[in-house]
Length: 389
Image 1: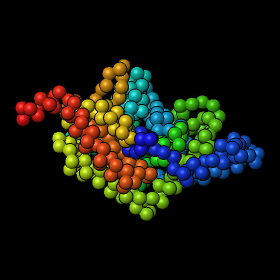
Image 2 (image 1 turned 45 degrees about the vertical axis):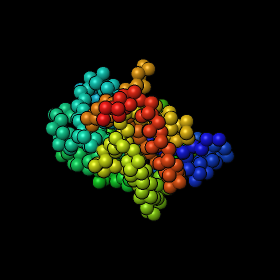
Image 3 (image 1 turned 90 degrees about the vertical axis):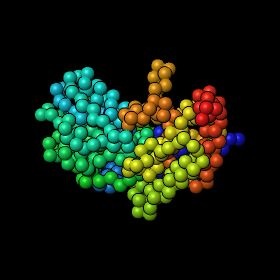
Image 4 (image 1 turned 60 degrees about the horizontal axis):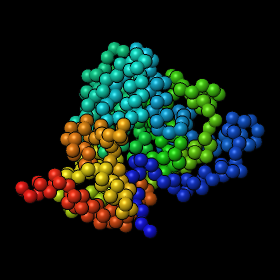
């Protein structure tokens, strides 16, 4: 049986055993609707509010400012669509997740204007580009905290000051940052911030949106008065409990240096690969990054072929490329950074989780170089270059 090592945690993380155990009772004996006033309902209402407080502590905010959602995409959409109206101007960046980019495209369709600020070769937004993009009708700035493909951290505190000075709302997509680095919404200066459960070892199908007290938010759904009338729909109690538990575990990990342990493993992986593989490099190596993410280019190969080859040998990684109408397109993040199309297509994302071990990194270091070498041997372009070099 093939051994399986999972290094694609930015796509989704496994639910930690402690999280699953916390959720288990709410699939069975504790089944009440949290809006009901009888014992069963109030029992589940209490655990929802405890989870809300746990998420609030993770984000350094008040529990009443946390809105539970179905995940990062809904949180992003609720913030973006819920804070602007036709005729408003929005500023975002070229490297945002599609949950933001496609939401902004919808805004353009309904009469908003959207400015897309660029990034430099490291994948970092210049706050002055955000400042220069401001207009009299600017209503919202939406910039991610950590990029999902490169792990690069954006200067959101500086951008938050620009937004505050211009009296403009500021939304931060923190889906790939939550539980990886400490987050303080007060220091960032944002009015809304999105997180997702399945990126931080909670289950899929649950997330949260921080909404600063007093910020007017138009709901996406209409129904009951759930989540203080900001998000209609019966609460996903088990998922919310899982998110709350994952938030608690993240806080404990920060206190005992768990984030530093992941960073050590990530750096060991990067250094080991670069020491063994020629014509390879780390994208955004000179930028501040979350501790778990490494995006490495391997010249003279196709990233999709490498993902498939590694998977057949038991190692799960990803490219970050999207498949549209049967055509593989290079990553919009890497091309926005100025990478050549061939280098963008040869880039592989390795993303670690709390469950990964030093032994698994050693397994990857044994597998990646030999896989790159084999794929290059099969490449007619690489063979030709080798012959004439």
